[in-house]
Image (cartoon, rainbow, N blue to C red; front, side, top):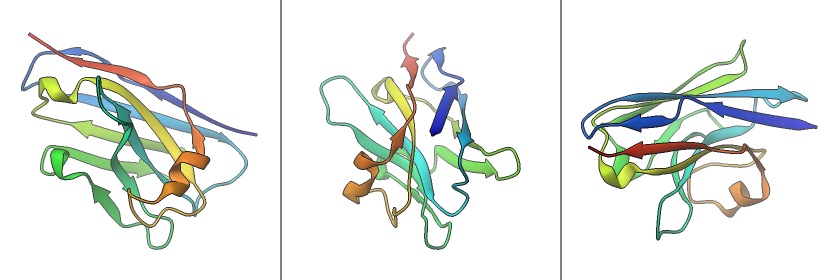
Length: 125
């Protein structure tokens, strides 16, 4: 059994910041890929940022580069997403996802991995 629990979402004004957290519990997944996806209104679910399984490299969607930073504390089995300079188009449900094979954000294996319940982020004035 594997569970992912996200927290940290909320309402923030444009230009503001939020920090999302994801705690993983269950069997060991230290060498798996782990990252953040989001579901924004009217769009397909998309990858935001991740650590790849192969080398732990970080990857970002073009739309968030320079604004979002992914980090993790392996001992605490926690992954973070620091989001700065938030825009209204960042509004959506953010999911923490992990999969055994995830060399980038664009592999389909994410969608057969383990997903958290999601946390709502709303950017609005």
